[in-house]
Length: 296
Image (cartoon, rainbow, N blue to C red; front, side, top):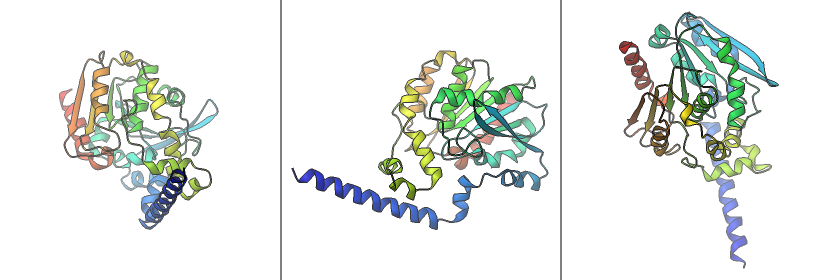
C-alpha cells in the first residue's frame, strides 16, 4: 500500500525537475527564439515588409465580443491566399512567405491571428472549433474580390481550415493542409504538458506554451465533432512528413479517406521530415504553388 504514494511523489519530482530544466533551456536559448512567439506587435510585422517596400495593411474587426487581427499583403486584384497558423504561434509565423516573390506575383496574401493568439485577444484561447471558425469567417466577407481563394493551414491551423470548409461550403476554391491534426487521438501529448495545467506549477512555463496546451487537450473531442467531410468539395493538397512525431502520418491517410467528395486529393509525403513544415520546407511549399500556377 505504501508503494503507490511513493511512486506518485517520485513522478511529480521528476516532472517538476524536468519542467525547471525546460524553462531554463527556453530562457537560455536566446530572446530571439521567444520573441518569435511573443513579439507580435504591428510594427514587428511591418518591419520586413517596409524593408522590401512591400505594401501591407493590418486590419482589426470585432466578432461575437472578440477583437480579431489579420494582415493583408500584396495587390488586391490578385487571387487570395489565406494563411492560418498552428500553436503556439501567430500570423508572424508565415513572415517569410509575405516577402517571397513567387507568392507576391501570384497572390494577395491574408494571414489571420487565430482567437487567443497574436493580437486576436491574446490569452483568450477558444477551444471550440466551430466557434473558432465562426470568429474567423468575417475575414472572408471583407476580402472578397471575385478571384479564387486558397486556404493553407499548418498543424492545428490545418484543422481550422478543414472546419471552415465544413461549416461554410463555398468559402474557398482550394485548400492545402500542412501536418494537419485531423484524426482523433493520432497525435502526441507530452507528459510534461499535464504540468502546464497544474495549479501554481503551470506558471513556471511561458504563457504562449500554456495557451497551446489548453487548446491541445481539447483536440480529440473537437476532432470527433468534425463529421461533415462530405461538404468539402474543392481540391485539397495534403503535405505531411513521414517522421512527424507530433502529428502522426496516419492523419494524412485519414484525411484522404474522408475527402470522398473532393474532386482532387493530392497527398505529398516528405521522407524523413518532421513537424513544422512551414518553417523547415519553405522551398517545397514554394514549388507547390509555382507548379500550380504553371498549370493554370
